[in-house]
Image (cartoon, rainbow, N blue to C red; front, side, top):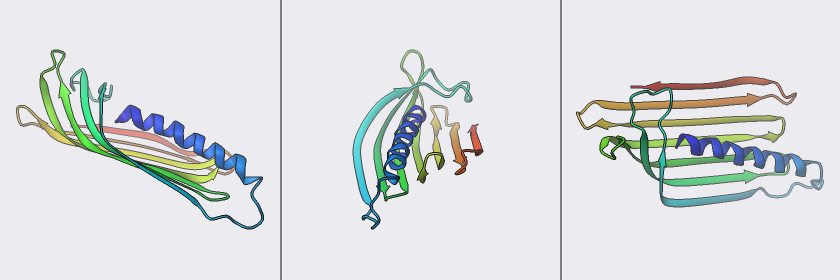
Length: 160
């Protein structure tokens, strides 16, 4: 779920580049916005745990639904998505150590390069086999002003 969010940032950056390239050639009359949406169910992946959360097994199996949407106008864009699913933390031998539910949301919008905002948030909650609660909260936010200055660039992670 965390690695996938980074790849979504790449998709959103590409979308921003497309909008930027088309802004200069837009006709005088505005065209209606284009809107795309896709839903993919039962995606299964195995990911590595975050370095910031030591003690969480060497692998995490996730199964989720991915909802992706985009909207483009002559001079702006919005790309966003949500992943909702379950996770199982596994030991090196494959034994389940913890399981639970997660939600990841992201939003990327702006008029195009260089101005844009990007926000990604993941919240995972569950229980270890001994009943201990598992909580992970990951947030990433970037804001770039029209003159290209990065005014916000932060990643916060909490594990517990």
